[in-house]
Picture 1: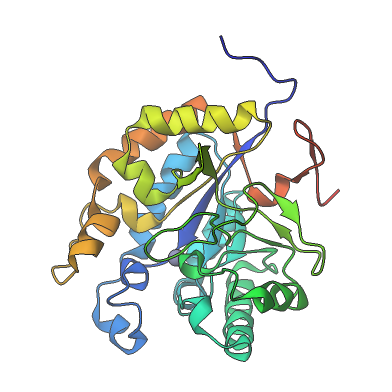
Picture 2: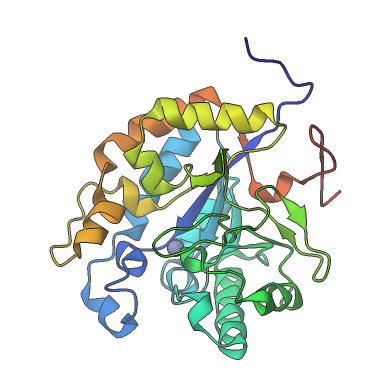
Amino acid sequence: MTKMTPYTPRNAFTVDLEDWFQGLTSTNPHPERWPSLESRVVPATQKLLDLLHVHDVQATFFVLGYVADRYPELIRAIGEAGHEIGVHGYYHRFIYKLSPDEFRGELGQAIEAVERAAGVMPAGHRAPYFSVNASTPWAFDALAEAGIEYDSSVFPTRSMLYGYPGAPRFPYRMAQSGLVEYPVSTLQVGRYTLPILGGFYSRALPYAVTRWAIRRLNAQGQPAILYIHPWELDLGQNYRKVTPRERITHYHGRRGLEAKLRRLFTDFRFTRLGELGVAANGSKLERSNA
Ligand SMILES: [Zn+2]
């Protein structure tokens, strides 16, 4: 028997909006080559938008500035469908490889591009590759200075590319910058903090594991914050020059993902990330923008 909590949090479904070659670490560092690669972000995103529409889910899209500049009509369509639009950098660079000034420049360029396309100033930010960690404390101040209200870049775990081990696992307001941080959900099992609700993990794990993890978070009075990329739903995209790691992280399990998402959207309630709020105590959420 599971114990009922007095308040069941809503969850947040988030989308990192980028083209497949911007997410691949082998093609990402070469924007000069991007125009020679087949852009598939529009049809891949449309597939995801259709799925969200059918299930009446409103999500948060973190949009790459480069994509916003090339496909403004796509960004407008996302906003008109009732989704929230945030920013995801301009060239999808690792923040921990940038200097504070380089980050400010890239962020400003990205915000301008997304605002131009969407017609509204993005309130939220997610770092490419979740690339904030203990070495980038300046990133949060730069976000607040740029007018960003909340961030969702902290992945309080360790993986091959990203992770901020030891960071808080649940939404919180940062004392210095005033920024609200919505860490991507993890699961605590003994002394291990496991990433489990992201694109790759959703593709690799059976849906029953995803469902169990969300129920467990909700029973603790916490929302689940999930993320995905449109290219994960694009079965027609096959780049032959990927590395062995990318073959797994980028391509494994794509075929079963759509069916898993349909079950997910049926089983749980989702809202836009910026509306989740920060937990005032263990079971009740307080709207941060009230
Ligand atoms: Zn990304």
